[in-house]
Length: 481
Image (cartoon, rainbow, N blue to C red; front, side, top):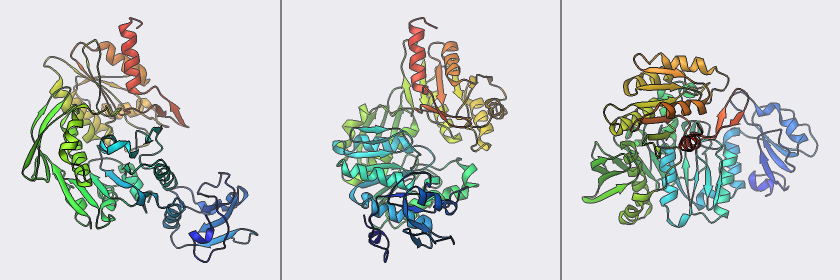
C-alpha cells in the first residue's frame, strides 16, 4: 500500500508493513510512537529507523532531521494507529458479521458456542481459549488481542472465506482501544462482578470501560443484554443500537422458565414472543442457561430460526476448560473450569452443591494469579469455606509472587474448612484425586484449558488441568500411582 493512501498529502512511497515495536525488523514499514503504560515509543523511533522504518508517526516533539525518512505528526497517536492498521488490512470487520461478547464471566463459552452454531463453519473465534477460523486453530494471544494482531487475524478470516467472527472483548481491551475501528454488528453483555480492579482501580471505572462497547455501536447493530444483572439495562442505556434482553428472573425478550438441572444436562422452556420451545442441552449449571440464552438470542437476531438452533443444543461440543466434566471409572464428579473471579467461583460452587450427594465431599484445587487483584483472594477463601469440604491451595500463574504468600491470603477466609498447600499444581491435582471417594466432587478451578503457567520471568509450558486429570486417572486405572 502507498503511504499517501494511508495519510493525506504524504509521499507516494510503498509501505509493506506497520510496527509499534522498534525491536522488530521490518523493511519499508511505518513505525508508530505509541505510548504504553510504562514505555513511550517516542524514545525508540531511531531504533525503528535502523530496523527498516521509512515513515515515523508521532504525537510529541521529536528530532525529525533524518534523510529518506518521512515524519508525520498526529494529534492522537493511538487513534491514528488503529485507523491506519484498519485501512492497511482492508477494513476486514466490515466484510464479516462481527459478534462481540463482554462481561466478567461467560465470554469464552458464548463466543465459542457462536462459532460452533453459526452455519457452515463460517465463523471465526478470537479469545481466551484460542484463535480459530476454518480448520485453523492457534494458541491465544490476549483475551482481546492488540490492534495489529486483531486486524491481522480478521483479515486472515476474510481471506479464508469466513463470513463472521465471534470476539471476546475485555474491559482492558476496550480501555486500551484494541477494538477501535472494529465494525460490530452484535454485542452481548453477560454480567458484571468483581474483577480487574488492579487495572481499573474501581468498579465504576471497570464498568465504564465495558460500557464503551455499547456506546459505540452503530444504529443498525443489536445489543443483547442480561436483564437479570444489576448493570444489564444501564450498560445499554446510551446505545444507538437495537436492544434485546435475555433472562430468567425478569421479563425478557428471550426468557427461560421451568428449568431442570441435572449432573450431565439441563432442560428449560424458552419463551419468545408468546411462543414456547422446550430445550434440552448437554450444558450444565444455571449460568450456562444464561450463556445459552445469549447465544440463541444473538443467532436468532442474526437471522436463524429458533427451530433451526434447538436440535443442535443437546450435543454441543465441550468447551475446553469451561465447566468441562471429566468422566472416570472411579465415579468421581470432576469439573475443570476457568473460574477466577468471586462470582465465577460461587456459581461453580453452587452447581457442585446440587450434584454432590449428602455425606459426600466437595474437594477444591485452586490458587490465585500473582500480580493481579489481591483483594479477591480472601473472598475466594470465604466462598470456599462456605461450600467446600477440603481445599488444596496451589499455584495459578504466580509470576513474581511466592505461592505460599498467595495461599496464605486465600487461607485468611478459610475459617472452618480443612486446607493444605501443595505448590506444584500437578501434584495438587494428584492429591485431590488420591483422597477422593466415589461420588465426591472435585473442582479444579482457575486455569481451565490453559497449557502454560506465568512465572517470574516468562510464560512456561504446563500440562493443563484437563490433561493432568486424564493422565492421573489413566495412571490410577493402570495402578501406576
